[in-house]
Image (cartoon, rainbow, N blue to C red; front, side, top):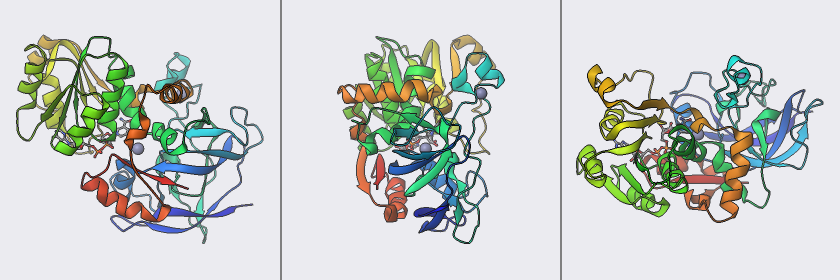
Length: 362
Ligand SMILES: NC(=O)c1ccc[n+]([C@@H]2O[C@H](COP(=O)([O-])OP(=O)(O)OC[C@H]3O[C@@H](n4cnc5c(N)ncnc54)[C@H](O)[C@@H]3O)[C@@H](O)[C@H]2O)c1
Ligand SMILES: [Zn+2]
Ligand SMILES: [Zn+2]
């Protein structure tokens, strides 16, 4: 039996999103039906609405969510009804060549639910990042559910499902920030500020926040930035060198998704330092024009970061515990809580830079 619930659908490129009735099937083998409690509004939802990801409209948006498992398919063992879970968009397969090499966080064959959620007339919906959680209920692969401590508030725990995990992981996992390191973060939205929080948690002593918007820099300070650089008013590379004894930062994190910012991150780095690329470029962007001798001569590493190199089953419960112990202020990412009918307005607030995260609470 399909469940008839309210969900937020993008019907066509650039069209305002619509709250409408959708049909969610009962879970089949390997699937879980989740009652959504909270779902953050991420920039990627807006990219879907604008046709920037693909043309498979209509989309059921929302992918940064927490909720309660309502039912599971016959063979599911990792979760059961009643579990409080954070949803992830990289359910690892366990059998691809990366998983078999002991690197499940890089799984090359991640998967989603097999059955489709639909509009009332049967039109199949494309669920954003295989989740579709701007809805009262959603159907996912059971592997997309990670149980975490239910003492955490859903609107806070759900943030780990996308941007905040990507940012924390960019620092702690991809960037391997160590005690005493200097770290520069370019772009202080939800992802960049989470990278700053991650750098602080890892023991970085110098944390330089770069953005074009002073509001974002004030938030960055709250999350642990020791130096603030407005890249529209001063040269970010010069400012980072000045903050690091003329050397550049040990780890530079690009959290914008732009070739010019990647170039800055490359040159703002100390010798043998690391550049992490967590911002997502558009398909037409090309690598910055950097002399090959600079690439060789400066040494170190350039590392793209998929989902912050996280392994949800390992990292979600751990970060929820750190949050509950007061060591990770996830609640500070929640700028406002909203209803399912407020997504379009939340997109505009995001575009105007007024929020870190608007979170739908159901
Ligand atoms: N790698 C992943 O797995 C992953 C996961 C989630 C999001 N992302 C990506 O991370 C990026 C950031 O996401 P977000 O939600 O924080 O977005 P956001 O829009 O909230 O933040 C981007 C920030 O960059 C700043 N900015 C823009 N141009 C800049 C420049 N030239 N120099 C310095 N700062 C600049 C903006 O003022 C803004 O504060 C996006 O590209 C998003 O798609 C990646
Ligand atoms: Zn795999
Ligand atoms: Zn996202």
